[in-house]
Amino acid sequence: MVGGAQEATPAPSDDGFATEVDAGLAYFRRRAADQLPLAEALRDAIAADDLERARAAYVAARPPYEEIEVLAASFPETDEAIDARPYAIAGGESSPDYQSVHRIESLIFRDGNLAAALPYAEGLIESVLTLQIDLERRDAFDAVRSFEGMLALSEEVASKKISSEEETWSDQSLLIFFHNWRGIQSQYMPFAPAVGRADASAAMAVDEAFAAAMGTLEPYPARNGIFPAYSTVPAPARGAIVRASYELRDALSRAAEVLGLA
Image (cartoon, rainbow, N blue to C red; front, side, top):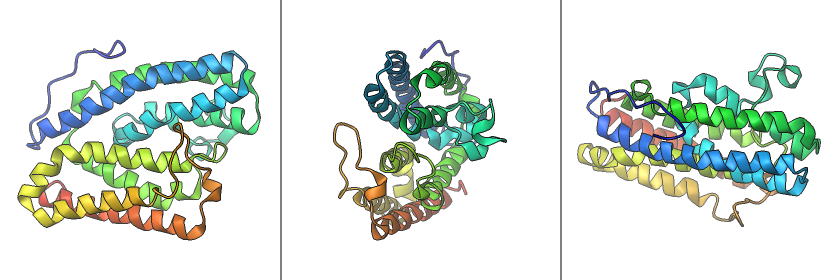
């Protein structure tokens, strides 16, 4: 049992892919367990009034949820609490309902106001504990929703996150792309054998699309978990990221079709 979560409800069997869904969820439960100490480290750095440490802790805390985000449609309230950007909240930054990690991001990278960030860091820890419970609610997940999440996030990278709207103040959009794709891959891989049996060319297309997407980031390697500033990435390289993420979406869509999940 992770983070005080309730025992999972029985796996649904109506789509024929319960084992694959369970494997993907097991990975995300591990990532949610990883997320908690990272959120606590961020809170501690902010409480210590150490700006550079807080900025580093913020970046270190981002990867797990950016992978788990694939299945965010199954826990929309928790997703909003953890990851909402200002445009998603009526009133934007002026609203007391805007409490996500991006509130923390702007306060520490833009404003340098750690005192103001502290209550939001405390709230983030509570939201991560809620996330761990959400991921144990097995009846909220199935194969169709898994593929819908993969398709939605691969499209979001290309259509929205490419604008740097997610990490506007930390300039770490490359980190977001990397972990979004990694999260998508973690949910696809349990289905890969079934896709290969149904249509080997469809399976190959997904493998090639993942490799191509990750290949767009190879010129910008992370060092100590921090990617180069996205503001330094030229337009042609950004265009390659866009094309790769759309191609990944299309390959995953075909895989869903061959499994009868689209």
